[in-house]
Length: 218
Ligand code: SAM
Image (cartoon, rainbow, N blue to C red; front, side):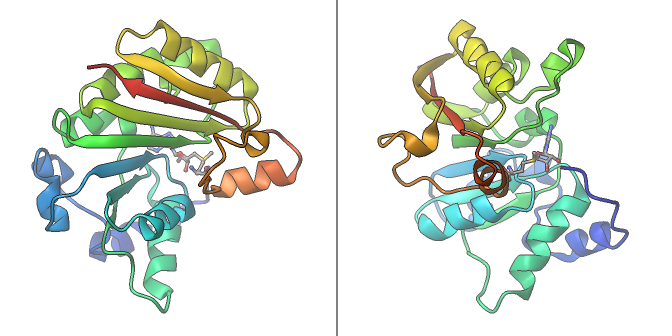
């Protein structure tokens, strides 16, 4: 998702208590940010953040962090929450960083679940390592996802999905638990499904949604 640059974004994010700054200093101490002990779930590439917000509201016993690299995109999530009548969920925070940096931000085992939703496909072969489900990224997730922690990935892009299945199956750190090429018609895998913004858009256009769930090995 590329929005035009919004000049006020950096300033608004700097002033928002929803956006955590100096994130590398929080490594190993994320429970303190939320002032409670609870499992930590993250969404990488959250876009405008409706999915992670809905997850946080539906699961108050979990701490959530939404991660987005573009300030102008994260701004949409922050302003929506700030302008809403209800207070933002206490179990939700945001980081404005690139996913490459995550092993410097989270300590080994600190994250219990990773959500990847409609990640950028990077269709050229020479850019494959930039895909958030590439073996390079799986190796990064292995550094901070807890043993048996889950990685959940949804997309409408069949080529990216096939690539992702292959990367998980070839990985010695992750086991594929389940997958479907048609999430919305898969009774088991669709239970409790929360739609993302891209999911609403692409399923509304008639495209099937693909999903895989992988588990980090012990
Ligand atoms: N997850 C949302 C959804 O399903 O509606 C947004 C999907 S959008 C196609 C992908 C988002 O991931 C964009 O907002 C993009 O800026 C972000 N993104 C892509 N690569 C990223 C990275 N390496 N680190 C952090 N965010 C990233």
